[in-house]
Image (tube, rainbow, N blue to C red; front, side, top):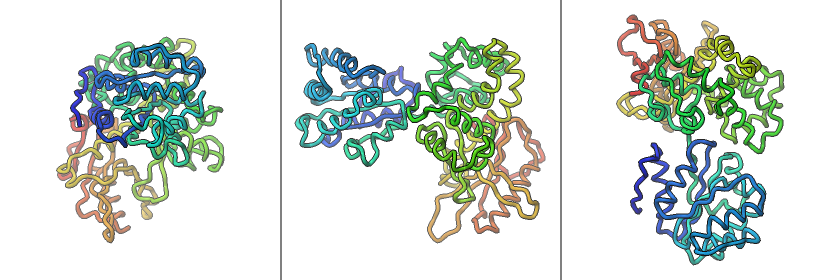
Length: 478
């Protein structure tokens, strides 16, 4: 693989960059097509434009426009590459010129769903040109198609579509993880970093473009920062959560989708719980759940200890914040009563937004833990519920770390953990984890080496016995 240095202005993304460089510089004639997808504002275009510049490739950013307008702009963008002025009558002509103008290099078409929406035959034409028997068979052009609508980009690779067998790269650009996000925002205080991340997540565009570089200077400044940015109708962040939902082409009647998201944000993680919360039958919400999942707005995760029981979570923190805080205070916010709206919602923010978000960060920490932390690398990390028939009270385990499954052996549990954002943890929390461990042992799990762990954003009481792993904010961000 040729060495293509990542520009200094591209933050992080080392793994994504390495995969793109492997594709762009591959000597194989079979490597012709790659797909890049992910939610909007994650820096896909920024990354691909930087790659195209580094390797001397062609980059075209599609827009929401007619086919005629798109062809005209495509010709204008391609002209400097081929040394002429191009006016294309159709996409077949445009593709012929593209592959002849960039016979050995990289070509990037960004926001491809805009083009395929107004030109439905375009994927078939691309497949025809890239086919070993097609017009571009003599060249080694490597074409990258990028899109911000995950549902549509996923359908491009479905097994009944023209491009299914032609893609050598399927890269999903994801938000920055919570540690990288803190570095990107320049936040050294881990408590402040959790609070900020629980609202804006790891979307790179938010601090610079959407918040105009307004970053909270301390935990004491956090409330004022919320009021002057995400709750301020004058900033793009204020309506961004609505746009995230509106951009998905499969979502037309948004009311039911907002209802489902609101139910999940309120703590209803099961399908039945969501249906009950919005007053519908479970069968009525199957389609909205599927669309939201395909759009990467929600994720379905299996309970750690109950196979077949799925828990839903919202993937984008800003949507959780909008559904839990902003929607119910929308009238006050629209009337400029920001401080009153925030004061009325702060308790809800801590319980329904920060608390669950902190639990998710703890699970992420456990999943990425080095081998020496828990004795071996985790196989799976999830939340789970352990039934306690004696006390008739289910025990919720926030961070269950399971080893890789081994055929013929009981499932080993590496760690059981409880996470509390705003409570000092005590020996009582350890007792509950110990009870869960004993019950799981009776159910047939291997708990001989299970590590009990307490995760807290508020600290630990000195009555917690030795041998329990304590993970505070410092450890979480170490």
